Length: 144
Image 1 (tube, rainbow, N blue to C red):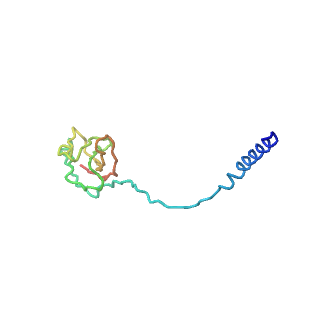
Image 2 (spheres, helix red, strand yellow; image 1 turned 90 degrees about the vertical axis):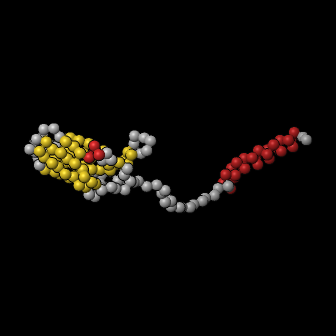
C-alpha cells in the first residue's frame, strides 16, 4: 500500500465516521405518545362523630357533679373511644377511656353548679405504634 492510498483510505474512514455521527442520531429519532389514567389504589379513612350518646349529670347540693356516659354510638374505622368533660368555665376536668367502666364516670370535687360540656370521639389507634387518627367529636352540654 502506498502512502497515498493509506492517506485516502484514512480520509474515507474519517469521512464515514463523521457522517455517521452527524446522520446517526437524526436517523434514529422517533416519537411516541400515549396517555393513560390510573385509579389510585389508596384511600383515607374518615372517622365521623358518634351519632348519639346518653350522658347524664347528677348534682349533689350544688357541691359535687357526677357525669356518666351511659352509652354512645360506635363509628366506622374507630377502635378506641374517649370522653372529655369540661367545667362551666371551659376547663378540661376529665378524660376517660370509654372501653373501661372507670372511664365512663367523672366525680368532681367541690364544684359550683352550672352548665358543663362533654365531647365523645372515636380514634383509630394504629396497632404496634403510638400513632392514631382522631375522629370528629359529638358535643353536648349538661346543666345542674
